[in-house]
Length: 61
Image (cartoon, rainbow, N blue to C red; front, side, top):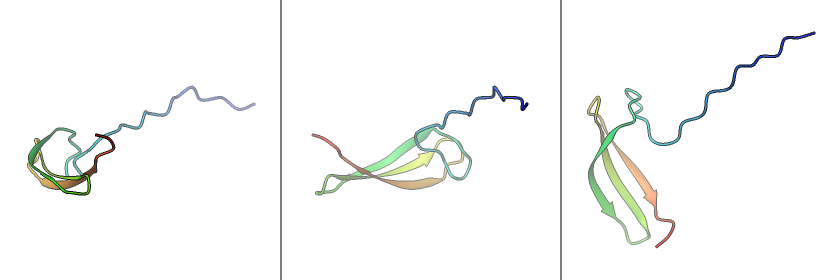
């Protein structure tokens, strides 16, 4: 007979995470709106200061 593990799998976190340091806190440096309902945001990590771009799509008015 095998022992049954009672360990639960950790919940997968949602949202952005800095690929350099793993921090989840950001500052939006600037936002640009496009005609086709897309939003471009330049974000900066509050921990390490690295910057990256996110592209978002509006899903409602």
